[in-house]
Amino acid sequence: MSGRIAVAAEVAAALAEGRAVVALETTVVTHGLPPPQGLEAAAGMEDAVRRAGAVPAMIGIWEGRVRVGLTEDGLRRLASASDVAKVNPGNLAAVVASGGAGATTVAATLAVAHLAGIGVMATGGIGGVHRDVLETGDVSADLIALARFPVAVVCSGAKSVLDLPRTLEALETFGVPVYGVGTGRFPAFHRRDSGLALDQRFERTLDMAAAIQAHHALGLNTGLVIANPVPAADELPRELYDGALHQAQSDATRQGIRGRAVTPFLLERLRELTGGKSVATNRALLLDNARVAGELAVALSHLARPNR
Image (cartoon, rainbow, N blue to C red; front, side, top):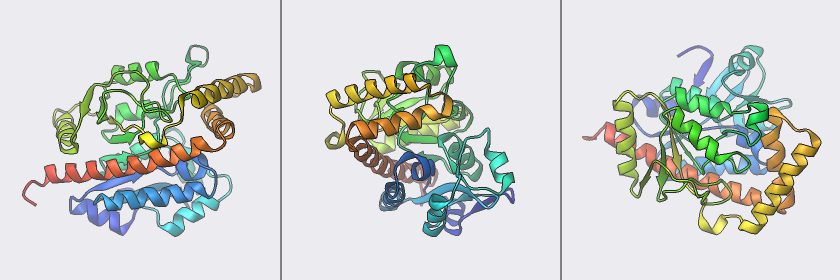
């Protein structure tokens, strides 16, 4: 491992022993949820991973090093730092070299997790193809990272502000499988069902783990999307969701919001327009995805060590 990467002792020991580890991104803390809910959600995700029998590895950049397994204190310092960069693979090296603070997106977390030898990560929703892609060409780096790094990402589909049909088409083009946890439909983040079909539905975690193991054994060398719908009790009501999303998109167009600013703007407007209900949904799906990721990592470790 490069001297630019610091792996926490607990994470390093688990990896050396072939035990289950789950990578977690840090943009949920710094950019995804309003304070202090980001820190609370991160703590909840770590707890859910541990209760499933796996070791959490929160990934972020601090003082010129990529930290794999941030401590509670380290995460608090990152959350309270000023000018925390939102890091993807394109600016990862520059942020590290600058000695500044950075929070990893799904794409950057995938890159670091693969480098560290972690095969599963959990997030809320992946990025994807933006609705105005024909005018802007805006496609999330998450999709390219999924095509490059063989890590399974447990998520509640792609963020609902995106073009979900084009996002699934892009994943198919890149050869990235999209599997469902107890569902054959692609979730729409705040909503359980986008109406779009998945590649495969699995009812048992062990069966899904076997498919992931076969994917890697066949040398297909891509990541996998593991779609886990938000718990039914926490789903946003359709009328509230549809109305808020339409208004948020109209506001973004009117204000000329572009590029990396689009998704954070839309999610913040959804929070305002739903009276905070979208944030509660976001938190619920984050915790459930962490649970599923922990269970999946444990199943994969058992398959890799059948006699232990």
